[in-house]
Length: 91
Image 1 (tube, rainbow, N blue to C red):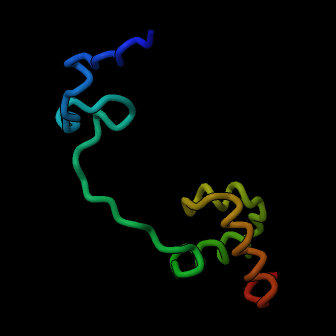
Image 2: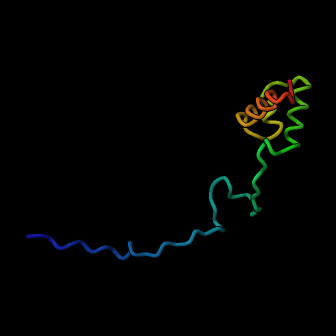
Image 3: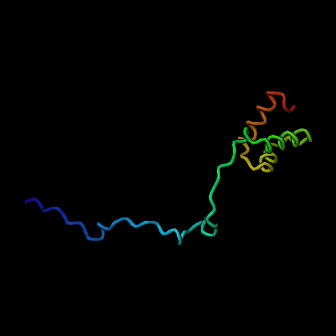
C-alpha cells in the first residue's frame, strides 16, 4: 500500500523577506551610502595616460608601480603602455 504524500510544514510557506538594508554585515557595513560611479577606461582617461607618459619618461618602467600610482590594474596598465609604445607615444 502506498503512503500518502507528506504535508509541508507551515514554515516552508513563508513569503521571502526583503533584505534589511539597515543591518548590513561584512566589509561594506561601515561605509556610508554613496552613489558609485564607473571610472573611465584607462584608454579614455587623459590624466592617467599623461601620468603614465611622465613616469615612463622619468625612468619608471615598473608596470606595478605605475599601476598603483594611477589606480588601475597592472594588466590594464601594461596593455596601455604597450599600445603607447606601439604608437610611438613613449619609448
